Length: 310
Image (tube, rainbow, N blue to C red; front, side, top):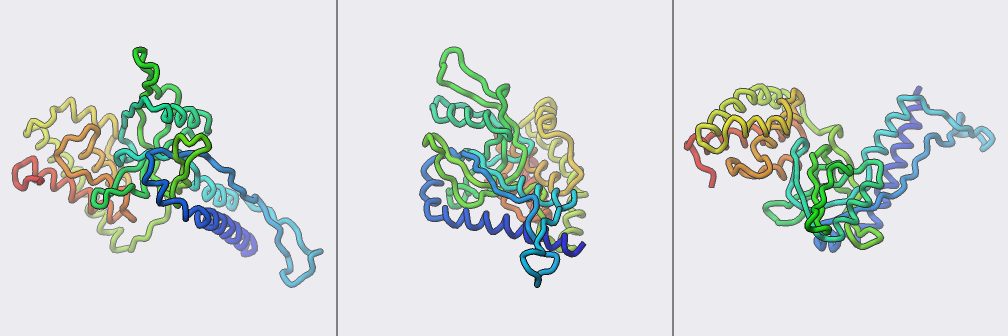
């Protein structure tokens, strides 16, 4: 049992070392690329051993060497690490949260090249990142959108115009910076999917996050009432947003993201500061829930006239 655990640890270290070496070798070219375009792509092959050569007796001769097979649990752990690190196209637009829908169109032939490439990939994902509102620089976190042929709309009057209507799926963090694909049409970046990444959070923070989460349903009800009273949106409009983002989730992380998605739909209602970049940058559920609760209370105060948003 201990020997198998050691195998998994070594395999994990091998993956992390390979990723670190790869990113470090690219680091010198990164900063200039990221600021010069809004596109990114080109998957690369990842080399991962399903089993490695280990010794029954680590002090023995080479003749003692043999392959130590991994059980199903070991393989799942290794596969999970592998699947979290992917290479996808990157487009710099506005920050978007999982569950939110986005419409985008362009006559740029490079966009057509990007879509053509994405449709040939098994994941069919594009990474969307926004800008840091304070520095104006691209964020290193964002959300993926899945693109299929049915999501692409053409214009009969303008054959060069391509449009997509997609929904954000998974949160990711950019590892290093993008580089141009082989056609020089768009950028691609190595990213880590962080939806289920282990978070650094204390027991006290977990407890406080749970307490805040319990107040969210009441705050949402109050917010929708003020939204209609202020004339910003009627019940049908609210129902349309709710249909897009789905019902209020139970999990704290999903609930916090849901609240901010509700407050900042596309197009914007202009009843809340755009805190989507901040939500994507949060490191744990406590930070997310604090941000969500503060944002919705601030919007309620704005709608009710108690404290206007500047």
